[in-house]
Length: 324
Length: 204
Image 1: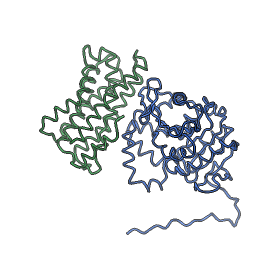
Image 2: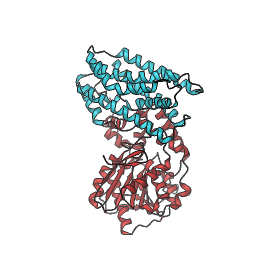
Image 3: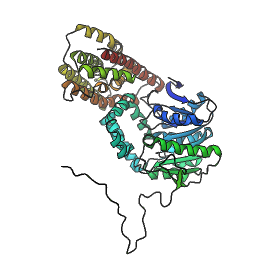
Image 4: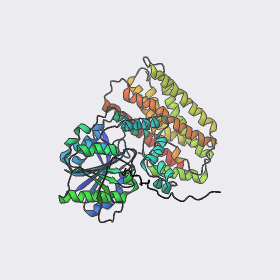
C-alpha cells in the first residue's frame, strides 16, 4: 500500500500511468476515498496522463487524527505529497470538500498547477451551507454515521440514480460504514469552525480554471459557483445537464469527457479563460461538447414576454398506472 | 485500518450458521472486556477535582457502559464451552493489559498521563469496535441479541462525543504531537485486537 509520511501522519495514495506524462491529481469529497477515482485513472492513463488520487487525512487508509486538522493543512499536505513523489506540476481536479482544498491550493501553491477544475464546491459558506453543515454535524454527533450516510444519498444523487440503485444502497452504506470513521469525518467538518472565506483571495488564482456545477445541485447551488466564476478571471463555468451534487459518481462518462475537453484545450494552448458560462453535452460522443449558455444562468426558470395571447407551456404528465 | 474482508468473512459465517451461542458468547466476551475497562477507568476519574460539567458526562458514560454490559449479558445465549473463554481472553489480553497499565497506582485520578491514555483508549474502543457490519441481512431484526448489538453501537457513537471533546480540549501539558501519537497508538492496538477477533468469529 503506497504511503508517504506527513509529520507523524501516514497518507495513502494511488499513482498510475507512466512517469514523465502530465499528472492529474484528484481530490475527494468528504466521505470519499482514493478508490473512487479508479475509473478516471482507467480513462485518462491510456490517453497519456498519470493519475494521482489519495485519501486525505481523516479518510480511507490515511491517518485519522482525532484532535485537530486545520483546513489549511490539507493544501500543505498536498504540496508535500507532490514534493515527495517528485511531481513538479499537476492538473488538479476536485469535488465538494476537496474543491475547497483545491481552491486554497491554487491560491497558495498556484505555481504547482497546470490547471484547476473545481466541481460542486464553494469558496465561502453561504447562510444556507452554514446551516446545512451544522445539521450534518449535529446528525453525525447525535445519531451517528449511518444517519449521515442516509442523509447524503438523497442530497448527492438524483431520484433516477436512487431508483436504479435502491437495492445496492444498503451494501454501499455498509462498505462506507466500514471504511469511514465518524469521528474522523466529524474532525474534518469541525475544521470549518475556523474557516475563513476564500473569496477575497480568489483573484490570486491565475491558472486555467474550469468550474463545474450540476444543473440541479441543491447542496452547493449555482450561487456558490458563481462566486468563484466572478472572481477568477481565467475561468469558465460549465453547467452539467440533469446533474446533482455528486455527478463524478453518477455520470462519470460525461464528467470524464468534459475534463478531457478542458485538459486538451489547456495542453493545446487554445483555452480561453473569459468567465463565460457553458452547458455540457450529456452525450460524451457528441461532436460539440460545450454549448454556450443563453439567458440567466442564475435562474431556474426562463421568463417569456407576456402577451394577451400567450399561454403557459404545457407538457403531458407521465402516465400513471392505476393501482387496485 | 481493519481489512474490510474480515467483516465479510465474519458476516458470511453468521449468515450460514446464525447467531449461535458460540458466536454470541464470543461477541459478548470482547465487548464486555472493552466496556469493563472503560467502566473501571470512568469509575476512577469521576471524583477528580475541577471536572465541573465534565463530571456529568463521565458519570453518564459510566452508567451507559454498565447498562451495555448488563444488556449484553442478559440477552446473550451463553455457550457452555470453557475453551471459548480461554481463547477469548487470549485475544483481548492486550486490551486488558492496556487498561491495567492505566489503572496502575497512583491511578488516573492522580496521573495526568494515565488520564489522557484512558480517554484515548476509550475513544479507540468506541470508535473502532463496530459489529453491525457483521449482522447478516437474513438476521431476525427482533432477535434480542441483534437488537442489543445495534443499540449498543448507536450508543457508542453518542458516547464517543465525550472522548472527542476531552481529547481536543482537555487542559494538558502533553504536546499535541505526542497526544496524536498516543491516540494513533491506541487505535492500532484496538484494530489489532479487533482484527484477530473478526478472524476468530469467522473461524466458527
